[in-house]
Every structure is written in C-alpha cells, then in structure tokens.
Image (cartoon, rainbow, N blue to C red):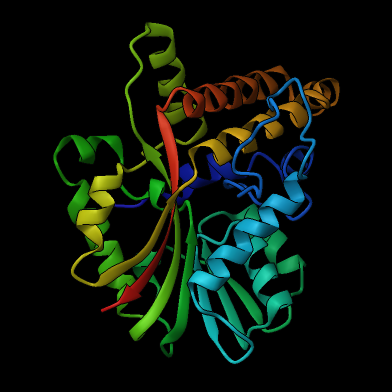
Length: 295
C-alpha cells in the first residue's frame, strides 16, 4: 500500500510558506544534480554553494528527467507524485502538449494549481486509483516511491511485489517504447551507532511516517518485466550537497520559523536535515536516476 493521505500531509502540509524559506525558488523537494561532479570545494550547512546555485542544479535535474522521458512540444506526460508542480513547470517551459500531475498532498496541489500552468492539471489522487483517459507519451516520477512500501510490509518481504505492481501499473499508461524519467532515494548501509539509528528512525517516524526508501537491487528486480533500464546514474553526493544547502538556508531563518511555526517544527527539521547530510556523507543513503523504456 502507499502512504495514506494523512501520512503524506504530515510530510508536506507543514505549510507552503515554511518550505519556501529553504527550498529553491521553484520548490523542488528532491535531489538536485550539480554540474561540477568533482565537488572540489567543501560544501555543507555552514558554507554556501559557490560554483553553482541550488536553483541551477534543480533545473539541471528537471532537464535530465524531461530528456529521459523523451518529452517534447507534441508529447503528453504524467508526473506521479508531482509535489508543488516543479517538474510540471519545467515541462511547460520546455514544451509539452499536456502535463498532468497527481499527488496526495492538499497543500502541494493548491500550490501547483496556483501556478496556472498552460496545458497542465493537478489531481489529488492515489496512483492506484488513477485511470487516465488515454495513454501518455512519457512519464516522470521524482522520489515518490519511498511512500510505497511501509516498514511493516517490508519486514514481511512485500517490497519487491509492491514496487513491481507500481511499475506494472504505470506501464499500462503508456505504449511500448515510451520512456520514463524516474528518480528515487535509496537505502544503503546501516549505521552502527545508536544515536545515528535513532536519528534515522526519527526521520522515518516523524517527518515521513509510513515511508521507506527502497534498496537499488529491489528496484531493479521490480522494474522487470515491464520496463528496460536504458540509463542509471547514482546521485549520492548530489543529494548530500542539496540537503546541506537546504539546512544552511533553513538555519538562516531560525528565529522566524520558531516564532511562526514553533520550536518543535524548527528542531524537528534541523534534526532531519542534519541526519540527511550525515546519511549521504556516510553512505547510509543514496539517490538514483533512471531512464526506463516500456518493453
């Protein structure tokens, strides 16, 4: 099962004005992709980005996924888990005949609709209940799949079947040969220190209840037999850099956040983002982008 709407709203309905303080201008809440792969300058929550802005790197991420889906002015696309409409906005600006998005977050849907994007629409809908009127030319989905398999079902060995049901259902919405720009956060190593484990558990239970990041090998097993993997790129260092910049920006608004949303919200997000930075640095987590083609 996917996360419930109530669980999703815990994660994303803190308030659009809250997330605006520390996300990029276009409200991407997923890993950016930076041009300077070497990362030869130290970057973290105590130092601003110097070689490339977060805004530019997020635009780069969107460009990659648009290209992976082989979109264009004459194409249609569905964004599964569209958030605040950041990918929809990119698709409209690059050129698209129609762009649809689905999300379970009421606040995100309101924000996305307020963009008033040409040839775009946003629905509040569980992907399992979605029934397109006609097949799409391409698909995109950015870090939505971590809401698909709760920890309890993972413990029952249901992760791969749940992911496969997701990929199979999405494949029914496009014709053979259509492409899918897919991005996901990954679980990797397990930390050995008790406090690190508690911080990861806090992130899962408090910030993203009902969610669990997949392992790469589980995704690879689930993608077949509906899809072929054409390209695969891991983005661990990119997400570490992204979350470090989020944390730096949020810390710059500490007094205002504490006054407006309360100490608990600031403290929870400080702990969560700090854990993310540490997690990507220590290989507890990673990120992957794939170009998939329907078989």
